[in-house]
Image: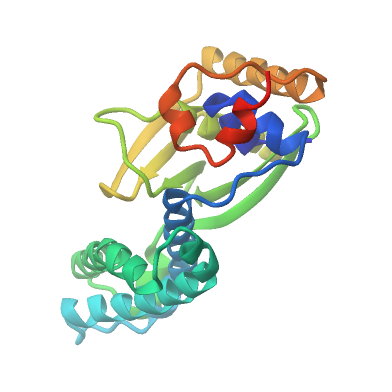
Length: 268
């Protein structure tokens, strides 16, 4: 059974995926990936506090009060995950304080934007506390879906259930000037196919949420994207079932950042 991340891993570097999945050679966590995992974990887990925060919000509370509640949640969760990644950070020559100083402004902005959104919604609808919470679109976080037909498994960051099923893929890295990165399109498209099979109805749209710019960008399913994903699944499966190591990629910038570059270059 392949995972959706195997597809994007193949797109990044088939050879690296082969080293990891077939030869069990994995690179040590790199600085960018460590910070990215911390960001993603904070978003996922801090988001679970939304209900508690919103239900405690009253008409007498100010925007500043709501923002401070979010700040406290983000601070607590961020510190937890920085400590969890302490050994990996130190292996890259980074202290936990340095990681906090680099990441905290990101979540300060998130606390401000998130509290601002909920505060504006409360003022517009004139509802607070549990009533406000019940008025919000509902969703499912980290939904794991398996497709026996495709031989594919994936975990969707969030599925919003508001009249229709909409998959949301959260990205903490940079966003392109317009549209979405190709890997993100394939990943979200794969989730649409998985959800279509899971729910028995066509899921034709989803969003990539780029948190660095606080923007959602839509991706539509179409026959071309569907065929591309199905073909990619077969390519990945063929590669991983082969006894031959894939050729080196030509993008040397990726090689410069790779943690198994020396092992890779020592092979034919």
